Length: 144
Image (tube, one colour):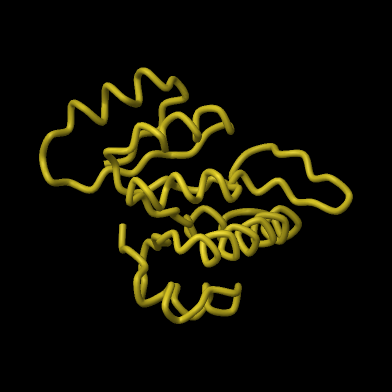
């Protein structure tokens, strides 16, 4: 089950409503939404925090994930999801920018020991390995 709403209250209601053992995936939105939903917890995957119009500075990439958010995700046992199906559909320039943000998020997850989530772990494991993930991260990656 994927929750794609931009309203934090609506997202929390949908998480509470799904009591069964299905895996709950929340689509990342802006920084404020991501922080609040990670602190709430009670779901398994935050999908594509790098997505969206984010301003890159001269020496810094805004990838939608920082060390604080990654530590909160680790504490609440939430994995950071990477959506490769969506990335394949992007034009070349946007694809390169998105992959640069994903590389940064992988490094942050490796430092904070936050789990990653992949759609097809077997198919995407080599790609994520070339983007900088450790073999331990790939072994612990969750299928969603």
